[in-house]
Amino acid sequence: MASKSCFYLVAVIMLLLTTNAFSGPLSPEFYDKICPQALPAIKRVVEEAVREERRMGASLLRVHFHDCFVNGCDGSILLDSTPSFTSEKFALPNNNSIRGFEVIDRIKWEVDRVCGGPVVSCADILAVAARDSVVALGGPNWKVKLGRRDSTTASIDTANNDIPAPFMDLPALISSFSKQGLDIKDLVALSGGHTIGFAQCFTFRDRIYNDTNIDSNFAAQRRVNCPRDGGDANLAPLDSTAGLFDNKYFCDLVTKKGLLHSDQALFNGGETDSLVKKYSYDFEDFAEDFGESMINMGDIRPLTGTQGQIRYNCRRAN
Ligand code: HEM
Ligand SMILES: *[C@@H]1O[C@H](CO)[C@@H](O)[C@H](O)[C@H]1NC(C)=O
Ligand SMILES: *[C@@H]1O[C@H](CO)[C@@H](O)[C@H](O)[C@H]1NC(C)=O
Image (cartoon, rainbow, N blue to C red; front, side, top):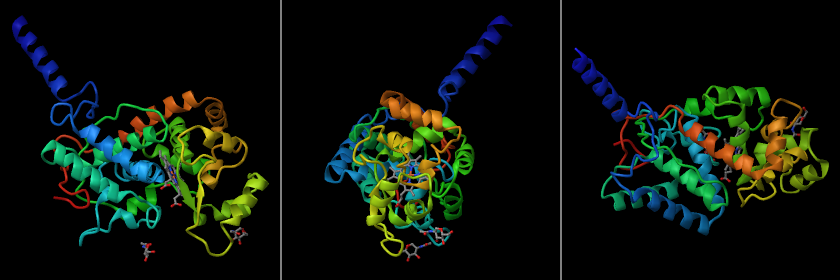
């Protein structure tokens, strides 16, 4: 009797260990045995792409975000249209805006080459490329959890509904993140992703012409390259040091120089003011929280185990 219950105990422990029940379905070591060359290969291609064009680091970070907020981090954003669905690339927040797909293709090709076959998912490639991009632009490092699998379908409707919009106020932003299981701290820390990259005039026009919680000199400066009519695609930096992952984004919010309405909403007399202020004083504080929140975002409803597939080509299901 004693040895029988002992056997069951051992069996249950073995099961828990093999199913990763303690560490969750994803783990940083997922590819350590199958393909230890995978992560260094991703880093090489990201570094090369960022050397060619610094903004690409920002663009790659954003792709991972827009992947995770649409039915989880499952690589759905990478799928091109098929007769049965329209690509998420054409959703309002993505169309003529999201970029970096050629770099993802290059990474996939290189990773499959060094691994001797398609063992790394496109969803994991996005998560690692986002981290490597942040590091390449001077930001924090963190251990990316891995083992996501790729979806076989995509949803333009979910992309239109679930990716937050730049005209949102704080309650809408909080509710958008909460729908993904992310809290207020995640919202503020992850919005710090806007410490790198650029936005098009049409995304901040209303803010620089109509908002009152904006520094007037800053608004005047931004209006020069963003007229009331036309120039929709003209670019402006999301913070005053758009090529560097620092905490200037939060300093800019404190001085009412947030570019997007949704950026300034985080420092506008509401419950997120104190966190914005803290991050504006202390880069290390922001850096640590950003890494933690990126892990939280990367945990959004992944496909694991026998769900989904490992795509041969990130642009289409096998
Ligand atoms: C909080 C809600 C958010 C809203 C409303 C929002 C909105 C936007 C908008 C409108 C743009 C400019 C797109 C364009 O003009 O083409 C943008 C750019 C960007 N976003 Fe966000 N975003 C949010 C959160 C995030 C998060 C969580 C991240 C990553 C952690 C992120 C990373 C970026 C980056 C890096 C860019 C620049 C991309 C580039 O230069 O190619 N954003 N975002
Ligand atoms: C996406 O952008 C293209 C090119 O500007 C445009 O022709 C198309 O109508 C847009 N698609 C959607 C769904 O808005
Ligand atoms: C600003 O507000 C006015 C009045 O509500 C509106 O007509 C206009 O379209 C808004 N946007 C810009 C860029 O002026």
